[in-house]
Length: 171
Image (tube, rainbow, N blue to C red):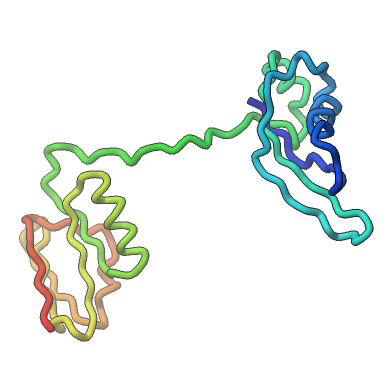
């Protein structure tokens, strides 16, 4: 598919004018157009007396390669980008280390969600005043790290936990 951007039409245009604008922009006949889809519609209201609709269109044509070559220098005629959702990759089966997510705010929750979708068993840590003032985390090398309340985010690097650990919250 070809993506056409900056197709400007009057605010009160007829429905058939979109297909006519496609034919005019690409310089092709109507039998070469298979289908088109309005990806985005915006407004240009910089002039009160001449408000325009600005379209971004995805057009399916018969001779796509030839048209893309013809309009190679035109920034408003490009290949439609791949907008299909890509599922999150899965973690290796033999994964022994656990990622640590520090913070239970919006970013920490989202990082935990993505890691869970990847089937990774992660450790979510949130240090607040209602929790203990010092947390002890065993690292891969067997060395422990003590986190105090004011030093929590200094450990925002890629820390991996050696063994499964259940965190408890103190009230």
